[in-house]
Image (cartoon, rainbow, N blue to C red; front, side):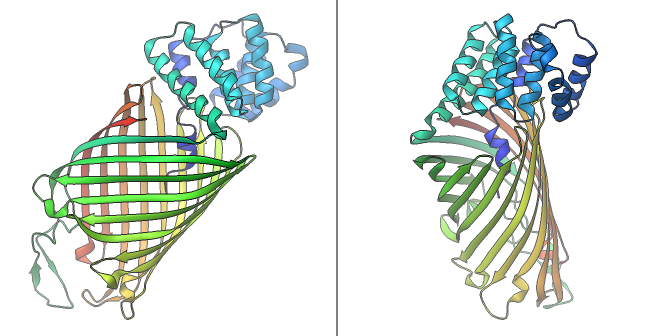
Length: 446
């Protein structure tokens, strides 16, 4: 499954508070015990307590700009967007050029679905004379608001990208020259060049296109296609092609979003078809408030190996995920899932397995143009029967770590360097390996 939807849904909104806080320090009014305590609660990521503290004094303090500003921030964080608008409007009535208040009220309007008003407020902030990097960020928010405005219209988007990099294990082979295969011989067997790990430089072209077609209030049909083609410098026998296609429906009802997608994936190696996977994914997503989200999902795939039919299998995945966004724009998520893959052929149960997986990830803005991201994952698999070659039931513990940064070169252009580290710790030598890959990607969205 992809990373939780909150990361993409709030991707544009996530950096706004941090960007403006750093680039445009808000005017500070005389603080007092109440506002000091509320500010500390907000900075500590406790908006519920801050909102309760401030709301109790609204009848006495409404009209004080700094109090109203903090009340508006807290209200947004707990999902009380209408209350936030009222509080921030009082700030702007007194201080019409309060940049933070105007930016935050735009966020509240966007959350309420009033995209046209939100867009105008973002444009007003932009006209107040912000630095160039902040203006670039605001352009993205304006674009996001326009997309929300077009929820009743058919919309399209796409991207093109080019990646260059180096991979120490293109074919996920063991990092050794020989292995002992007990089922064949007690002596070490020398591995062929294609059987062990192969390292090479590579270039990869990619692109994708998506369309969203509303069919009724809160219901839309989604469809998309994406693909990559990877060319290795010396080992073209491991050139890899990948095509994904999907079509489905998404239903939004208040804080709940239901998605059902049909998916098809095709992988080729050295321009020959290798594997095809067709299936369905269902997901329920619940947005508790502006900063917390859970999702539960299930996925089925029918795997067909065009040249190794003995590996054809049914794959099932079921899991849950949680995501949280802090006021400083950082987003973190965690997920856990169960996986089961069962081969169709008889007498090869040693290829079937059950397992469990864990994933953790985070992203945070570093200024207006740079986003840092990273993830850790682990999958632990127990196979069903004794492997006839190694005379044991195979057990794998697969780990991966991804670190990277995305830099907005200019509007719609990003540059992304990243590092991927992988390890498969297996009790069967042919499946025991490690992998390191470094790459840089230039991407154009449209």
